[in-house]
View 1 (tube, rainbow, N blue to C red):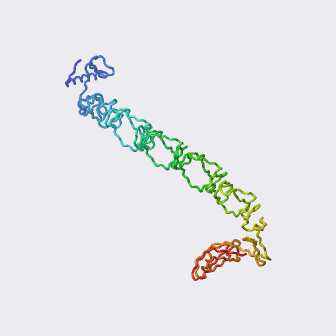
View 2 (cartoon, one colour):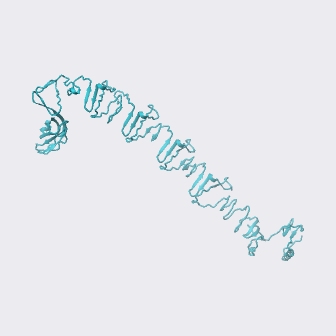
View 3 (tube, rainbow, N blue to C red):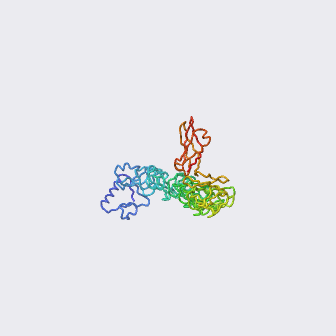
Length: 547
C-alpha cells in the first residue's frame, strides 16, 4: 500500500482523488488498507490493517475548533491533562467517549451512561457515586449535605448501613424505624441498650418503656379511664415492664386503685381488703339506709370481714341497732351490755344490763308489768309476774293480788281495790257532824302511830301544798316586786285561799310577802320592802292552797 505523507500538496491530491471518485458515482465506496476487493456493504469508507490505525486530529484544547462552529458528530482527541481522551461533538458540546481524565476534570456538564471513576469530586454531584464529599443525592457518600427540617409532618425513614467501615449502601427499615420531623417523634419496634431522652418504647428515660432506669413522669389527675400500673419480675437489672391487666388497675381522676386481692398489711383507704392494719372510719349519721356491721370469726390474725345479713343491722341516721337477740356474759364488776334510748325499744331482751334508758311515760293506758330479779347482787335476769303485778302509767294505778308490809302512803279505797283502812290498824274517828269544803274528794290520813280523833264540830278543809325557790330583783325601799319564778301547785285555781310560809332569816331581813293563784296550778309571790334600804331576797317558800 502506498503511504501518504503529511505535506499539504499530498493532502490536496488525496482529497481531490476522493472527491472525483465520489462525484463520479453516488454509490461509490472507498476502502483503504488490505483486502481492497472486500468492503462492508454498509460502509462509505473502510480502513483495514493488521498493524496500522486511524489517527485522528490531536489538539490541546477545543478553543480554536469551537470558533469554526464544528458540526455534531466530529471526532477529536484532546491531549491536555486532565481531560485526555476521545471526544465527539454533540448539540450540548463535546462528550467524552473514552480515555483517562487523569486528574480533576473541569466541565460545564458531564453525562455518562456507565460508572465514572475519579480520585475526588469537587462541587455538587447528581446521581450515584462510590464516594463524594458533596452530593445532592448519592447512595454511597462520605459526606452529604444536610438540611435542617423541623416542619415536615409526614413520616420519614432514617438511613443506616450494613457494615461499620467502608462505603456501604444506605438503607431504611420502612415501618420498623420512622421519624416525623414536625413532632420530633422517633418510632421503633424496640431499643437495645441505654437511651437518654423521651421516647415511646424502651429507654433509660422514657414516657413509657419496657426496660428503663428512669422514666419521665407526668402528673395526671384528670384521666377518667382505667390505667394499668407496671411492674418488673426481678429486683435488679433491666427488666421488661409488665401490667396485670384487670387484676391491678388505677383511675387517675378518682384516685381509686383496684386489685383482686391484697397480701400483707394495707394502710389507707380501700374498698375491700382482706388484711388491713388500719381502716379509715367516716362519721356517718345521715345515711337512712340499713347497713350491716362487720365481724370476724377469730380473735387474732387476719380474717375476712363478714356480716350477718338481716340478723344484725344498723341505721346511721336513727342510731338504731337491730339484732334477733342480745346476750352478754360479763364478770362481776365490769360493765355489761348497756342500752340507752329516748323512746320505747321494741323487742329488746338482754340478760345482763347495768343501766337501762328510762322514759317518762304518763300516756300509756294499758297494763304494763314491773320487772324484778331473784337476787340482791350480781347480774340477774329481769322477770315479770304477769297479771299478779301490773301498772297503768296513765292512771298511776298499781295492781297486785295481795300486799304484805307497811303502807307508806294513802289508804287504798275500796273502789281502787283496797280495804279502805290503814294497814297499821290506826283509825280516824269522826267526832260529830263534820262537813267538807270544796268539790274535790277528801282523803283522810294520819302520819303518827296513834289514832286521830277529829273535833265534833267545824269544817274539814282540804289543802294543796307545794314549795319552791323564788328570787326577786333588787327592790328599793318602799317599793314592791314580784318573784322571778312561780311555784306549781296542781289543782290551784283563781280565787283559792293561799297561805305562805317564809323562812325566819328572810323575815328578819325585813319586808312582807303575799301569795295568790295567778294562773291555773300556779302560785305567785310578791315582796314589799318596808325597810329603809334596797333588798334582793331569795328563799325557799312553802305555800298551801285551800280548796
